[in-house]
Amino acid sequence: MGFNQLPFLWTAIFPIAVLLYYFFRKKYIKQAVSSTLFWQEVMKETKASPYLQHLQRNALFYLQMLAMILLVLALLQPYWKTKGLDGEQIVFIVDTSATMEVETNDSTLFNQHKKEMLYLVDELSGKPLTIITTGDQPTVIMRQETNINQIKSQIDSLEVSYEDENMLKSLDLAQSFFQNKSTSVYIFTDNLDRQSLPLQYENVSWNVKGLTTEVSNVSIKRFGATKTNNGISALIQLDNQSNKEQVTELLLSNEQSELVKESLTIPPYETITLSFNKLSESSFLRASINITDQYSLDNSMTVFMQDQLSKVFIDSSMHSLVRTAFQSMDIEVSSVPTEQVGLLKEEGIIVTNQLEMVDQLERPSVFIGRNDASAKEVNGVVQTTEHALFSFANLSDIYVSAVYPPIDDFTTIATIGEEPFIQISPRGDIIVLSDIQMTDWPLSPSFPLFMWSVKEQLSAGNKYLGTFSPNEPKPLSLGSATNEWDIYTLDDSYEYSIENGGAFIAPKKPGLYVLRSKDVEKNFVVTLSQKEKEIAKGTSYKLNGQQLESKENYSQLSFVPYLLIVLLLLFVIEWEVQRRRGFTN
Image 1 (cartoon, rainbow, N blue to C red):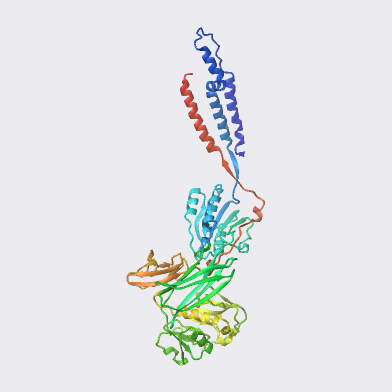
Image 2 (image 1 turned 120 degrees about the horizontal axis):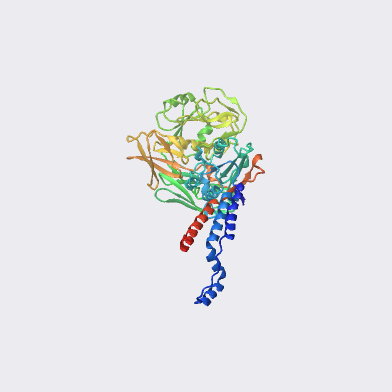
């Protein structure tokens, strides 16, 4: 406890003066009274409660003295010291990714973080607060705010966005608020490596609030399906992320019934791959696992069975192993003379190395190697970006001796060192910048898996918009006459509407959705990224900057408002005592 205005201690002379006044006030002389009626009764009452009688005779004196003392205390501005947050300003970085929905201690991790934020807000002591939410585009939802009620209201309204956290982007945004001020940054997430923090700021402290308990989770890591001549073939990967063996039940179903029901046992920290063939025709397939774990968002996945091209046409100059990879998929494969590739009229996937035909072919195609350029030697490990083509194919263990020059304005999705290896054209052509004989890729299991992914991507019909991540924006030219499309869930629940050419933003929750405009329907899928299907125990820790290391920060809780309330009550009581005695006495 302390006082902010000790110089006002001189005002204590006022209650002392009042006390002296009462000492030297006029005293009345005792008078003998002739009547002794009821004398004994009065004396008995006085002796029975002498303190009460004294208080009744001197109530006004005590009330005035107490009021004067409280007024002096109020002028001294007393306060109570409480531990406060470090720094001149506070920054909250709130992870709103899907993994924040993990259940722990009978609540989601996100709700626990919100409670902790509300607790910290009570210790702001007037310091400005900035709140940043994570995502592909981090958002500042509150900037330098000091109003406690507005801050708490904003925190209560926070929701999980299901996007990737992209914590590095949020950290970069937070650094723009430091401005050489001492700052305390609180990061509410599940797991964050200390090495990810920009520790070069000496006046910034980092407080990471993570997931501190062990988590039991079984995830559907990947799920894909394709139509073949013998029905539907499906491939699924299940990942046990806990330290105990898990028993679960896998269900594969379509819009009408269950197709597969199988009990499985998954060893700890193991991933199993299952395949199912000759499944009945369906417009979509849904995979789910019947298990009670702490993270349910990755317990189901849905894939849309898009229209498929039933043939693959391979340039006769291509290596025979390319033909073998496509033939293993139970799809019709035909060899076409090199000079006739550009003359094909039949619908199908074309595989060639004649890159000059990339703008002549009607549909996106596959180009393996180039016949119009020379290759140069390369050395390094293949690195890939996050793309659907690599969902099942891991290219890190293959060897490539040489690559062809890349194509400008095409997007590179795989590199060897700094040289592009695989590119995607704006319309969707897939270009592998190396001949098969320049690599050992056909010896790797990733080769047929990659070709399967290529077939899936290039065989999509015009009723399927594709796969999106939560809240992913994408401009779409839908060509509707009404210029308005409505988005519905699989259960026919309305989400929102978009206009043709306007900003399409995918729904935030994973699942199968339908885009409708009168009698036209287009399907699309929203799915979590692989990163948001991995749950691991994290830690909570604090890292102080050098200039904040030895400082202790306290906030002051003033007693003055409470003293004023008591004073007001005393004045009311004093007035009532004076009224009862009569103001003329």
